[in-house]
Image (cartoon, rainbow, N blue to C red):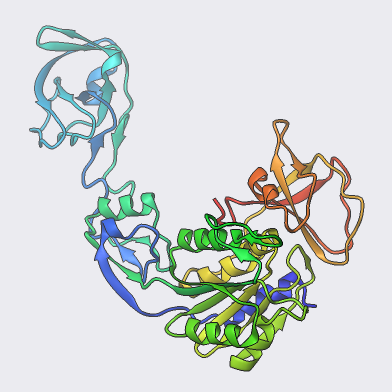
Length: 398
């Protein structure tokens, strides 16, 4: 069996990122991946402006801390004021351009209006409450590099420099199917010995969250020829095929021999718990990943292997999952020869507590928990030790 790191390295070395791109209106680019660096053609802000409602002044006119200045003009946002005359103040509103000659803004809470004049009850320093031209973005700078998955803040930044369209890589095309004669869809009667197909909903949700176009071939019978036919169909025009179930060593596990018959199986079985029977290969021009059938095993192996593989296929920079060192408020006294990933959640005292039942079929542990603790092979945990915590948020599961 390969170690977790060996298996992940193998997948990453096999990646062929998508190259095709399209240009879309910026408002339609949420959750898409940028195809090229985006540069700003202007400074942001484009001119010095005020951070506060108040009065634009010359700091030298307010050294007494109690200056009385006539108000010479009013400058709302979007209006260009006249140059400020010495010994006067300009009423100014948040976001408005600083008039030539002014070098500070005094917030209105530090002033008193007296007729057509204002008393400045503060001694401002030059630059106070002034946003400088280009302090956020400078013309010619890269604001969004290629490979960025575009979230709300990214789209706002693109709009702030006037980018009405963005070049994005095409969506990754992923085919999925699920093996098992015992699988039943929710809404249908549950016969003796049957179970509902939870993995279909879980994996589809994870793929949609990662911006994939999904071809769902549904439930495939536990028969070799049916599995081979599903693989051939899934390979038509898809970048990746993901299956759930049928990759173990039982007589009814047909996915592995089907992949070997229709393509190539490059790796199988990883020294980890949960999730040992994970397979990787290729069918036609499509990559293949076979996930275990147990729901927690399928969930964990998707997060640890499929997600980084998806991101790399989508043209995003490769990076190891972010982790946090936290205190374990539990014991894990029995070492395993495999790399274990147990479901935990943060508690009110700043530590981690574990779910009582760590079985690979106990999907409630993934709902109850908010992350995984990584336990390398042969290691135990004593309460109070510092451990490696992988939040689901960092793994793209929320």
